[in-house]
Structure formats: structure tokens, C-alpha cells
Length: 170
Ligand SMILES: [Cu+2]
Ligand SMILES: [Zn+2]
Image 1 (cartoon, helix red, strand yellow):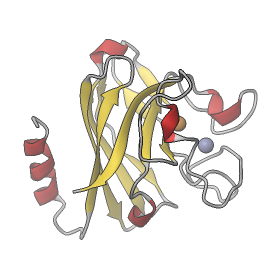
Image 2 (cartoon, helix red, strand yellow; image 1 turned 30 degrees about the vertical axis):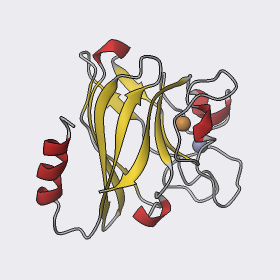
Image 3 (cartoon, protein in one colour; image 1 turned 45 degrees about the vertical axis):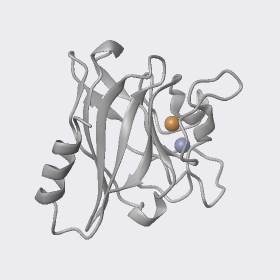
């Protein structure tokens, strides 16, 4: 609820865009609300703007960030956030890579930057995505960075699922 005001303010600042989406992001371990990621279509692709305060995560630096296939953040088989499925991959490439290359998961995004206080505020751009791809999917933030390859570890070497939100229409 406390983010409603921020979302409305953002909506008005971006009102030249026909559509705005957002995800309310939850710490998968504690269930705590960490803020919103606001999502809009720019001329150059989809922009994800985080407004997150994740101090309890205590990790400055980059965190892997992806669109996952399903619009659920629930646990499954004892794994936090597993109901979100894998990285969104409509072309069935089964390959992890860069947000701007053509032969990998469409859901591969640039990582989100967190400062020493757990603030995530820096927007990222996904040039291949369209807003219409995102209805009913989720966004996931992982422990640690992302090397945008499947080597030496699959899916960019990202750690466990840390923060998740279902993408919704404003
Ligand atoms: Cu992910
Ligand atoms: Zn991927």
C-alpha cells in the first residue's frame, strides 16, 4: 500500500507511454515487502526501474535479474521461488546469455546494482523484450552476479532465488 503513492507519481511522470506495468517485490525468505519494480516500454526496449530497499540482504554489488516464465513466486519442492519456473524462453533456446543477443532466453536481463545500504535504484534496459511479453510472468533477483553464459555454471552462475515479484498491469 505504501508504494501506491510512488507508483501513481511514476505513472504521471511516464504518462506519454500508453502502458505501465509493475511488480511488488518480496524477500522470498522473510516474505517482507522490499518495494516495487516499475516497468515500461521505451522506444529502445523495456525499462525496469527498481525502487527497492533490501538492507536485510546485506550485499553490495550486482545481483542476477531475469524475467521468469510463470507469474508465481511460491516455493515448490522445497526451493524458494521455484514456482516461477525458469528464465522466460519462448523460442526454447535452453541457453542463457546477454539481454541483447538472439540465441538465448528472452528473459535474460542486465543485473541490478545494490549499494552498500541495500538500495536498488538503477534502471536497466532489455532491448528485445516487449511489454506484451510480460503479462503473467515474474521477475526474480538472485544472490550474486550473472556472467550471461552457461559456463562455468548454468544460468550465469547466479545463486539462489532471493527476491521475486509477479508482473502486473497498472
Ligand atoms: Cu532468474
Ligand atoms: Zn537465462
